[in-house]
Image 1 (tube, rainbow, N blue to C red):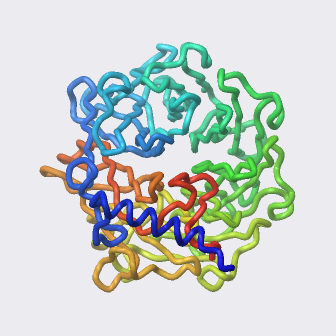
Image 2: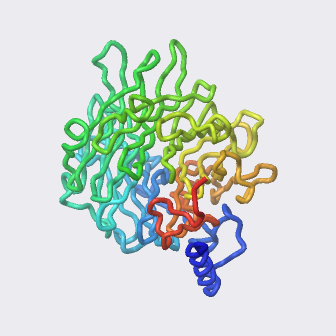
Length: 478
């Protein structure tokens, strides 16, 4: 007898949505006007009443559908800083059950020393509906640092985490921060750079640390809770951290850049995989790490993910163009993606002179891939939000809302007032499969809002709208 369960389930869900008036003839990739105001939510965060530069660089959709944005706010005139987490309802309104107004902020350097400068923030799920927020900090005197905060579901700092809800680190050896990820039991990982000046040449290494849900180093991970390693290629041995994610088997994927050149600038994508216990995974590229290039000399891997078949997706920028690679689980390039495992493109034009980047990516369970980032509408200018969807073979998906003559690619201008700049910094899927994008958008020159948008999609998760395992209605992932 034929197996009809999934087909029947899909028909049942479709009829249920139709009966509630929720099926709309909308192209995937078009703004979902049922979210916030016309598909967009702008969040104006003032610091000391001054115009500021804000950007929602972190993005999380919680199990209940609420949306968390992470980032930093900088007062342009007075220099004050905040690390910020914003929570929206599933419909895109500021969630008043989170810190009273939907905005949780930490002002100044946590230790009270000097004038802190907070930079890009990343977010991850914390226990009981809470949020981890990870920001780069400049301590106001000499040194980079980082701060990891744990907020409760109501937006207050969790006193039992670290010191008063914060774990901080900094000093002469610290460089920059990359990303944060969390496990189901509340353990949290942070990814950052260690600047070792004691060797024969400058040696900037990657550090992945794991903490318990109380903020203590997890001694079962790496050495004393951390794994420190480098690629040590080229003249400078400088490796920069950018993105991190967890595979379904608990292994850790990290991406960034490594200097591979001799004498001149030559930086490539860098990717590493650790086991769940923090060792470099020898089943990935022989020693747990690899670099790859696209033919340019300025290439950075700004986003990383794994799909339902454990393939590794890494994306970023190559000499001003978007760049994507797909690797097999063993770290080798996947030739079924774009012929050789690699793809470069721009959102608006292939004529050159653009500076397009991918900052975020998310795989669908059907093998398709959604990316978001920065698009330039003219040579080097006109910064906008770029979103694209690719098929499993690396071709652009013509069923996705597209620019004329640019299948699978769309550009949005989310600036308001006299502003001209908007940029997409992260993308994920909501529990019902719709696309959520975060970033920043100007309301006036130099005065940016956090921004979140929801786009239509034609992809539905097959396990009761649960994203676990990226299960799809289709019987297999391409």
